[in-house]
Structures are given as C-alpha cells and as structure tokens.
Length: 225
Ligand code: CA
Image (cartoon, rainbow, N blue to C red; front, side, top):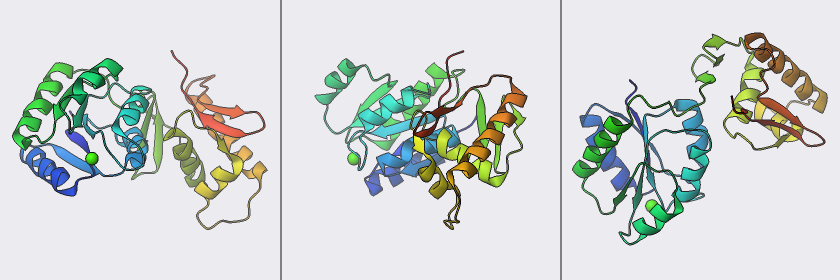
C-alpha cells in the first residue's frame, strides 16, 4: 500500500512539523501550500490520505474537499482553527472522514491518520479507476495498458485530465502543450486530440473521456459506468 500523505497547509512551521512526524512513522508526506495546486497534484499522484487545512491561499479547503469528492474517495482529514466551526462543517456534509481542531499536537494528527486509514483500508484509490499517470515515464495507462502517447499527446492529456470538467479552448491547450509558443493552429490541436481518442478507443471501444464542446474546445470527463 502506498504511504503517500498529502499535507495541504500554508503555515510552513505547522506543515513541516506534520511532515517530520509522519515521515518518522514511515509515511511519505508531501506538502502543498496553495489551494490552487491541490486538485491537479491529487489527480496525478493518488495519495493515500489528505490532511486539508481550511484557510488557504487561492482556494479554501471546503471548496477543495468538494472538488476532490467529485472524482475521488481518498480519505480526507480537515483541519480548522476553530472548534465551533466543526459543527458547521459537519452540517455542510463535505464528505471528509475526520475533523481536527488547531492547534493540534502532531502526535494526535498521526493517531488520527492511522485511525482513518484503518477504517478506510481497502477503499478505492484517489485517482481515476480508469487512468493511471506515470509522470516520470510520460505514460498514461488506461485500465493498466500503456496508451503509447507522444509527448505532445501526453501533455494535452495531462492538461485536460488534471482539471476534469473544465473546458479548455484550443488556444489554452496550445499554450499548455507548446512551451516555446511555436506557431500552431487550431487544427493541430484537433489532430492531436483525434489521435489521442483513437489510442483510447483501442483500449476500450467507445471510451469517451475526451469530449469536444461545440464552438469552445475540449474537456475531460469520465461518465459513470
Ligand atoms: Ca491556513
């Protein structure tokens, strides 16, 4: 089982203290201090558990919890600085697995992490059941099979996959896939998308996860089932 724990915390000393305690217990902690970076990272790295602070720059923990629950059942422990806020959070039914109040002792956090993991072991992973990303190898696997993407197709896929549901225009995709701002036109994007879909359909016919949005661009979305 992976021991990767994501710590989302903008207070550097708190984050580092948690990281040290978790590392001592044999976990592999990773710190993110900006709300905006969380969802793309979770999609690509499939953490075992997420410690999620509520007050964060860019995007707060409540919004993040909702977004993550849109695609994943990864265990989430939320941290708030106010004990009276926990009732309100429970009322929001965010789908978090536990709540802890700051200031907390790192020992208590480690105990909660272990308790939540015991309760949720055997649960599904945090990423897509369908897709696995191999960042180092520039590979995308669908149902465990390598799609054999080119580098451009890989970057195109990652751009869409890490922000499911978001519609990207062709221009936005071009700036993401060509860092050197090479002159390319819309049809280049369309042709890469076409090849990407073809490769997906070889794994599973009618595997519809890259959707074109008429007049705008493309988005990634896994339909149910
Ligand atoms: Ca904070």
